[in-house]
Amino acid sequence: MTAIEATEVSKRYGTVVALDRVDLTVPEGEIFGFLGPNGAGKSTFINVLLDFVSPSDGSVEIFGHDCHAEGVTARERIGVLPEGYSVFERRTGRQHIEYAIESKDADDDPAKILDRVGLDPADAEREASDYSKGMAQRLVLGMALVGEPDLLLLDEPTTGLDPNGAAEMRDIIREENERGATVFFSSHILEQVEAVCDRVGILQDGELVAVDTIEGLRESLGGGTKLVITVDNMENGTLEAVRGIRGVETAVEREESTLEVTCTNDAKMDILVELHDAGVDVVNFRTEEASLEDMFIEYTGTDR
Amino acid sequence: MSWAVIARQDWTLTVGERSTKYLLGLLGFVVVVTAYVYPIGGPGPHTTGRFGGVVHGSLTTLVPIVGVLLGYNAVVSERESGALRLSLSLPHSRADVVFGKFLGRTAVVAVALVASLAVAGFLVVYPFGELEPLRYLAFVVFAVWFAGIWTGIGIAASIAAATKRRALVLALFVFFVFVMLWDTVDSGVTLLLDFAGLIDGELPGPLQFYFGLEPGRVFGRLTDGFVDPSATVEGAWYLGEWVALVLFALWLVVPLGLAYRRFARGELA
Image (cartoon, rainbow over all chains, first blue to last red; front, side, top):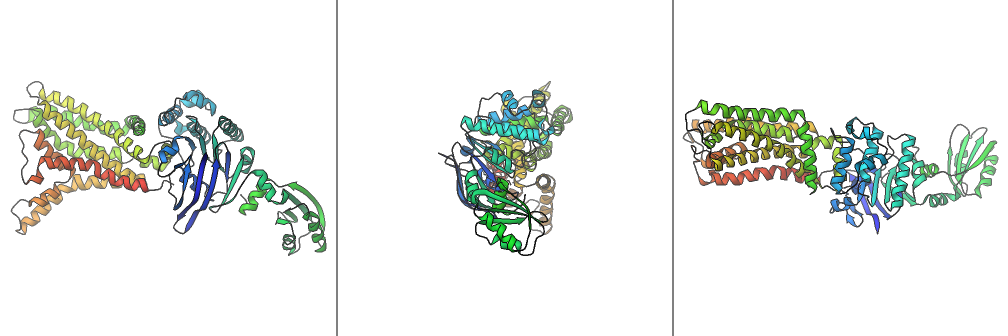
């Protein structure tokens, strides 16, 4: 059974393409990280899943139910932390959880849920509109956890959370996954995705440019070697010359006189030789394993 | 029973709001005072049926404004803030949300109306009046129905507009046209046609039907036809109380239905 099945999903606003023929399958039981810079279309995709927005072309199914035609059935088995929400006015935190319990026809104990997401009993009796962004985020995560959903759909879940809160969020994601839930979450923060995800998809300008495991992404990046080279001075055309070497994936000038090159292992020597031939003195160099961040930049061509 | 969950939550929220208390307090006050004054004011016999004919005048002005003011922000304020996203992330359909809100808010007005009309009925009957149970019951039903129509118009504005301000403008516009302007336009047209020598003091039937479409007038014809024993409904068959009953039903369904079609297709991004 697949948790999420997107087939050729496109969304256009006039001439702007928000989603471009996205094909994506998330099998049951997986933690899937949906990665991309802001404005890449992550939220649009999740809005399509929730039927807030209907796709211009293609369709999305959750557990085999079309998100538009059978939206309510599709949402019966999921827990959602949407983006751009606000809590209800004049309702306490506890009443929010109770609303979710009634809506999902579940029999959870609100106190347990609140405790799990880290809201203490005093907070639970306060009006949620007085909560900080982080507390609201915890509350809505609590609403998502109601009824032991088979799929958790979390849009930028760590927004507004401090590092501690973000770590707790990751723990909850892992716990839910161990219980058997599929987790789909979007983020532009790479470390978080790297830390918990089985697979990631990278979205860039509405296009799904890569879907793979983290290891897979590393491998596809030429063994994941990164050279950081400090030179005495950069000559015009040096960068282009380095890029022209076989085995070099990317070459960027980080700061004044520092080069970052991702390449296959065999290309390392060639690069140093090329620099020497170009009359550039290498002051220092070191190698690093490519981090997800490098891959991210590699794939999307943007610094976050 | 997804809409029931929404209706319950909305009921609690609406009742808790201070503006609701003021609006409903005003409505109740006017109804009860009218009932208190009614036996003193006019010649007898004083019956609850005749009282319906009297109080319906203030209800046709008050209920619409209460209805649109309660209805206009029902959905759009949550849409603007983003709370609607929380509801629609749960297994609720947009229809559940609209219907739940409609029921929740109409119930609030209905309870206030039924309570104040019950007190009013007592004031009319005691000590010298006469209770006409069926006629009065019919009146209460029509009044609640009328409140449902106007709350529905308010909610229709709420789901048709993208911002709270636009919803308020739209709702007040409908109120203004139907409740404040309608009679003036009617008299104006009558006077004009009379002056031109085309009619003799009274509009032709089809035009009367057209002007009679306004919900308050439909309510009036129902009161005259079914409640107030001292009044009669005159004119062609299509101006009668049974046709009015059909129109009353349409008013409940059509504005909300049209606005819902737009809302169901719209995007909530």
